[in-house]
Image (cartoon, rainbow, N blue to C red; front, top):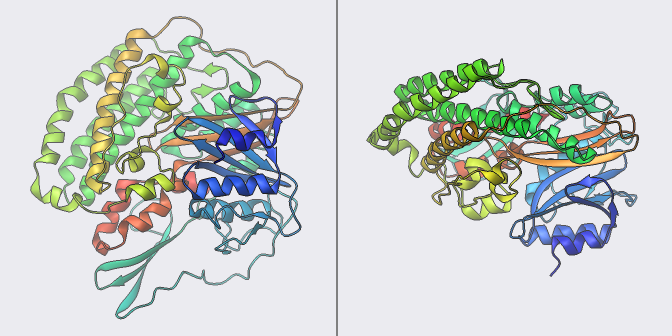
Length: 505
């Protein structure tokens, strides 16, 4: 039985890929890794490509080992499809083909994913091109059976949300199949990254998904620092974690209220909305921006925390701790609300594990992976916190994971404020003069955000791949809603709260 370490040893190691190894492998070793994925021995973290190479990031969860495999020499017919044996790779491979033209052999689903038939014939990240299909109706998968009908929702929705199309096959009110079509908010982030300097790269990363601007800038900066071997000032390291926990706190409070609102309980939305606004105002006072956008850059942070900002954050902790428990009790003791959330949209533990689902989606279904705990990157290696895990896998469980994570973030913020070191917050980026690579995983509020990049000798970004946790969570909504009624889809969908923009890049 080959481990990730064994598989990596079969390839040729690429230097400067700190902190994890990248190995160039042949098709046989690539196929060996696919078998390990299909057997559940490895977790797929990411899959991306460029003009003549395809890359796959893998996690050996028991040992917490992470590595990247690269297949550069491909046969005439393309590279061996990962999705052929491991379904979580399917959308990644369809998107990879749209972006680079690299063809997966025996791909189970050959339909385009990001490309809606409106793109230029030239691929933004590659030289080769597959034939584009004729523009026409998207071929949704058929559902057969007596008394079935289809319901089309989106891509333009009634609320002010991002576009995405949902095609239901239903028997009366019961959902038999849901199929998603995304890609409507593709921005070409990875193509824009090529040639960008490091400050511009951090700005682009922070705009992949607006509600995770801290997590993306954090991951991008850590990837750059890994590539260049930079030691960030200790105060900056702790301030980054402080921003990340504030972002997590704001998003979880907003989600708890929004989920309850979709279950016809707007009172929770109002109260949670007030607390979320309080977090955003405290972040603005502390760091000069409500979402803390562009505050994390390679080498440190651009905004320090003064005494007034710290006092505002301590006041915030007191206010949330005073008001939040009553809201939790209200949620738990409202029978009509529990009737909507308990047992709805159940995600099986084996699916969460197979897809490597992170964040509250994975943890509500028994998968407790959290990069802050699993990888113990600083300053989390000096902080005390728990990662809540439940096994019910329903909307209610995803709410409770958020509730517990709010409580943990309050503890983490308090610890950071108590132990925040003094000193500088930004270090100059050195000129290396050679090609370097780096990768980072950072825990966003939805789960693990991955950034892999290659820097050119002159210090600009040559290639950068950014992977949102939603890539592995969007497909799971299709499984979770099956057997539920159509009216429960908004509730189930909100409990996942996947990112359209983060997924569509």
